[in-house]
Length: 206
Length: 267
Image (cartoon, rainbow over the protein chains, first blue to last red):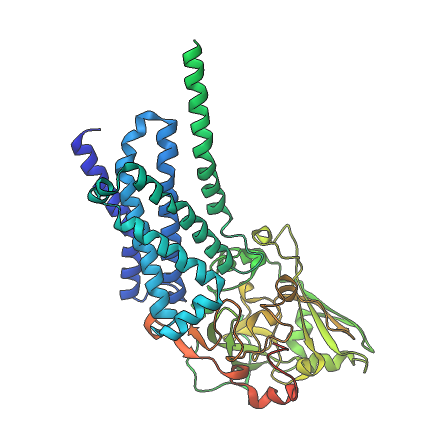
């Protein structure tokens, strides 16, 4: 991929990733976030964070499937960082609009309400990944250790989905689609690795 | 068309009404989809005429009432009530109707009748969105006899001086203003008087979250959130919070029905 194409595509990615935030900011200014703006801010930021995690986790399987798409790796950090960005607004919105900045309420919620416990845990797991996302940190940790550390994203995603399931009412199936997509992406990795090995073997045999 | 209404002494005064737009575009009516905006889009399919409510069970004179009979049975009152959802949001809604007790009198319940069971309309071909949840349809709700007879319990036929929009439970529903919204069954086709506490939809789904009584109570948390405060629908996000009132502020009318009951146990 040419340098100009890469810059253009990165700019486009930035714009796309900022659209959900722009909608919320514009809606807050014009009081146009629907009947329940607090809930809308909370839902939109959480949903965007999960969607961005899906996209960032889709990159490796896509590269494994089509080697022509290997340049996608240049976008993974961007999606990951935007995911934690939205997760942070999500957390901040909870702290401000639900707990009213009251530390007692926050600690009480974390201790008593399991969907909040796992939500906060998921965010905490994303923090070291964001910090070590720079090239400098990759060098300092070494590729292997860095890769191991960043496997934490799988746990964070599982906790994020659990947070979603435990938040909706019993019997409501809204989180089903994103859960199925996430499960497919999780399974894609070992399956694709195995498939590549098989292909390698047949190539050798021939 | 517009409904002729009279003022009611039981109306709530001094509170800003939620807009018609918000009352009709922020609904929980899972037969028409699980998102708040779904019922406004999908409930047009609900066939509200002809419509009949069958009243049965422990009564002297079981009867079926046509919707036109119900509209003519008593003068229609303009009754504004606070509406508090178990999800911690609230509205102020100008309903139209009359006390449910007026309808109860028509069928003369037996002394053995201790509870009332409401059944909502359900047709899987029309309410095609029902598979978005694992709820067992039709929707069922219930009240204790004294709760049903309380003058605040409203047989609701309209809103904002007009007939009920489909997404708000047309053509006839119940409104129990001191209880969380899900207790107020929509689009009612059956009313049955029974001697035992009936099974009710959300209580069946998760009894620890939705008690049979479900009186609005800031001191009893929902397992997943506090009920101390609520988000007022239609306000900007920084001005939405307000404190929730015990019995949604209707304690003077209803608290005596629960004398001696532990409201933490019977939540």
